[in-house]
Image 1: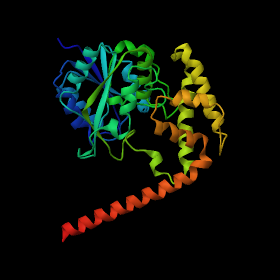
Image 2: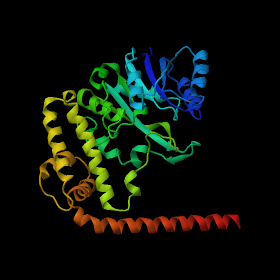
Image 3: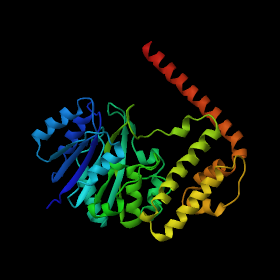
Image 4: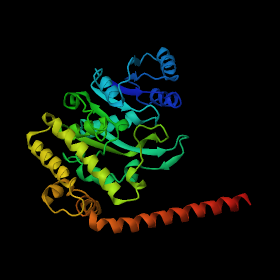
Length: 344
């Protein structure tokens, strides 16, 4: 017999894509669920669309927020409404493949897990495939495989995409409240972290969501640092991200096991220290090593150079930057030539 699931959908000005997403959820092969939707003060036709769907399907429970909460608080509101034994998260602009819920629940039961997440196929706004695997594109595959059952899985950066989550509701007491102090710690980052600390994780390697990328995405596949022209810009971003992460961890230290609270303090002190170093640093290398030791050798060395040896890294970065620009220009020229030949 199918177990009941609460699916949590946070919406805001999503009129363009929300019907397609609602249809994909309501048409799942697994049908025992409630669809809890919280609209965060939309000013377009989103609410009208949601109300029309709610009239047609009694599984839809609709909440209309009078004041804009922001996406993290909107998801947190929905998490507090969960009454089923399991819950899932959903974005408003994706498309779920028909067996997403069934596949997630089968994985959770097979692995005896408390928390399941999976991969996505990245598509454009018209659902044309851009990348067959989000995990491969974002280079998360190895980390997930290596650290799936470790507390370090979601510690240094986020490996969990929120719209792929299926979890037992018993984990909510560890996940709530969700911190909202840094833009670098999103709701799925925190939820995945708490699940890795206090529950058993499982991963579905096949893609079961069409992860739509468009100009209005709150969070997506953009690699911000790829657009930077200097190592200083990259270093500033890297340090800001880690300061935001570890400041959040320290501020919410009660959420962590005691043995990790000291680790959080040391990590924050480390990034505060290198924030004051502009050229060379070899102090507190052991802290860096402890944080990055489970990453690839390339990732380890690259981050050590950016964080601690920017004086040596700047000329190498400039060579790389000009090489990538040249390669991009050649690619654009080749594409232009191909278009011209086809037109002729």
